[in-house]
Image 1 (tube, one colour):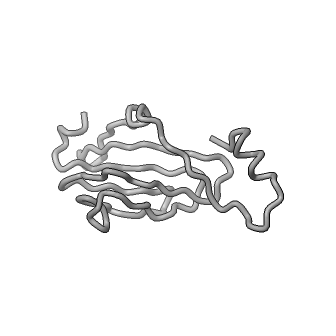
Image 2 (image 1 turned 30 degrees about the vertical axis):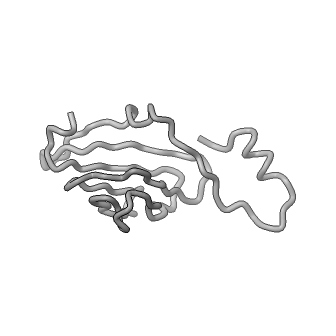
Length: 118
């Protein structure tokens, strides 16, 4: 997804400071777009790909993060960040992932038990 019309107008306004980021909320149905997949090892993971055409980097803000013994990564190509576990790095359930320097990224969740991803 590139810039929408409102974002494009804001980016074109003269400003002393460059625009370095945009916040977008994922709609709740985005979780249903992610898919469970079986890795060559037999492990199951859930993956969701996000894209923003032309972006120099992407990161995700997690809220109410609680994966128990599971693990979450964010990545693009060879750039991998994580695993994020439990209630996140600071234990509050809210945090920003590391930035993936690409215009596409994957959020990958590895549940403890593979039947959790079916």
